[in-house]
Image (cartoon, rainbow, N blue to C red; front, side, top):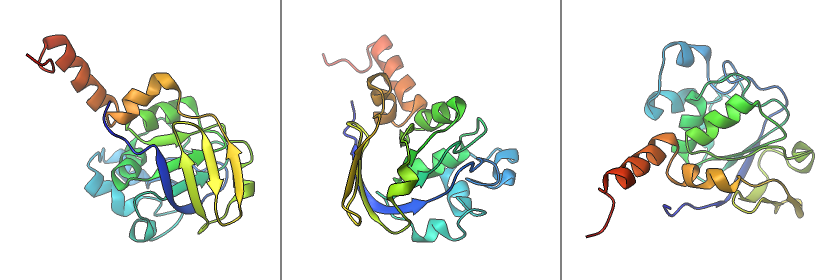
Length: 179
């Protein structure tokens, strides 16, 4: 497996409940226009939810959201989040959204009950996506949540579905084997 930093330390960007993918994570024009290059998506990330987000965020920052985050089976916003080195922690998200996030290689923890109650935008967070630890250093609060499942760690570590498939193909054809 690639060397992935499973623990992120950064600022919290708190969103609410029911943030849709289209119109919340990225504008609908990004989805309709079939933009998949992070350079095209990043300037529009959270444009309608948190204008200017892409100019303030740093690698290691963590999006914290409530229930039903990223409704809709789209991946454009997750591509941008992964490219920026962000993490996502939410109370819940639809299965197709979770699948899209993992498929893009985004470090994501879902089913984090009441996570909105223990943080606010600007708080300093530390999240271990491999072991399920969530620490808010600003408020001195620590919780354990469901980590990324073992069966999905390799997909995320390889940068998503494309990286996993490249590795699988290499293993099948012997291109990745040492002589």
